[in-house]
Structure formats: C-alpha cells, structure tokens
Image (spheres, rainbow, N blue to C red):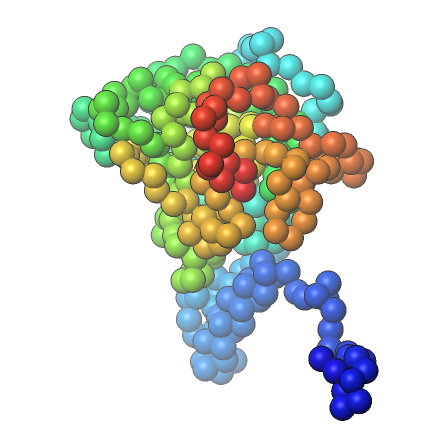
Length: 340
C-alpha cells in the first residue's frame, strides 16, 4: 500500500493488538468454556448447584480422597518376564510421572486433574466387544481375555505429539493375537478401537462439541506388526486407570494420541475411518501419525523431543527409532500424508 505521494505507508500496530504468541492454547479455552457453561447452569439455581453437569464440572477442582477400588482380579499375573528383544537406549521414566502426566480428555484437558479423576473409573465388570467384519461377533469379559494370552513385559519409548517422551515397561500381549482371536474376514483392512463412553465419572463426556466416544484406527497390517501391543499393565502390575486400565493400545512408532485407553470395542472395517482427533482437527492430526522429525506440527517443531523426567532435549528419531520394525509398512505410500 502507498500514501498519496507514492511513498510506502508505514503500518503501525495499534496499542490494543496482541501478538500471536499471546493466544490462549485451544485446550485451555475449550475446558474453560465447558466449566463456565456448567457454572451458568448452577447460577440459575441460586446458592445451590442445580444441575448434574455443573456438579460434574465443579468436581474437577475438588480434592477429596478417591473412592476405594476393589483389587484387580488379574493382579496375580504380575510381574511377568521381560522380553529381551525390545531394549531401550535411555532410562525408564519414573512411574509417578507416567501416571500423573496423561492426556485423557474423557476426564479433563488438565493432565494432573485427568490422572486424579481417572481413579474413579470402575474397571470391573468390563467387557470388550469384537465386531464388524469378523466370522462371529462376540463380547468377552476382560479377565477372560487377559488370561487367554501369555503376558510379557516390553520396554518401549513413547512419544507424544506434544514433543515429549517417556520410556515405560509395558505389560501386555501382542495385538496380532487379538487379531487371530477375532478371526477377521478377508475383506477387513482396518481395525478401530473404541474407548468407554457415557461414564458418570468422566466430566469430559459432557463436552458436546467432541465426538465421543474416543476412537482411533490402524491398518490390519499395522496391528499385526510385532511391535503392536495390547497393554494390560506397566511397572510390574496392572495398568493404572490413568494409563488406560484395563486395556489400551500401544504402537510405539506412532504419536500417543493414536493409542486408545480404556478400550471396550474392537471393530474390523473395510474402509478407513476417522479417529477422534482427525475428526476434531484433521488439518493437524492425520490417520497415520507416524513419528517424523522432518514434519512439524502446524504449531510447533517435531525435530527434537523433551525428556519428561529431566527436561533435556534430544533429536527425534524417524518412527521413534523403530524403523527397522515398521518402515516396510509404508513402502509405496509416498503420496500419503504419513506423518501427522
């Protein structure tokens, strides 16, 4: 733009303008929006909280002791032998950090709050439904499912899309064994995992703008890969509720948002479905979500990763360092949006 005598005009930022860096993170805004919605419902009732939704959202800020939970019926299976084929190039992350720093939006977008509220989830009784393109749809009790397969411990790196990492001794059984148990039809190409829904102890389920229940999916070849694990435990005992008890998906070469916690349904499909975050923000979160240092998230770099325990940074590795196991799965897919 030029002024009336042809010289470039000087554009001055007004005093009220804020830089982009001052923008409130989306997760904080959305969580505040939901809390205020609940509080407005409470205000209509005067001094008393008039709606269950308002009570649920205020409960996020309470700090009463968690209700006692019955012992895990599979606790006698732990600890199990560690599989030496899967080793780490870094120390294990202290368990309190792994339990206390979780993305579990069913409970809260604030990580410590989500960890605390997850302890209220009743994980017995619990069943897993297997349906879709299978020989016979079935629903199986979680304890029968866990005891059906030999458990093993594997130490894996885990990489969050938020650019931090942890190293965890997971316990579980190969996902390929679940595939065999399901007996999928030859037309099945994808496997979708669905998290529990409509829980009275999960305030996040009242966020109507999210597509609950949480789901995500993989190709059947990815699920059959030797690294893919159905997680049932960690640190030599059954999974903590905050980490996805009683059953979660673990694919260590992918960003963590792909790996559903609290699984209640496994569905075999012939067409690629959209997962939770791909539905919410597809321009940022894609189907594949393979860890790649060369492809940044739209809002931050993925070139390095932060140790959750020490804060130290190190270079991110392609496929989170598991390329020797999984790179072949993506040959011939140069045109795909493989990363993010």
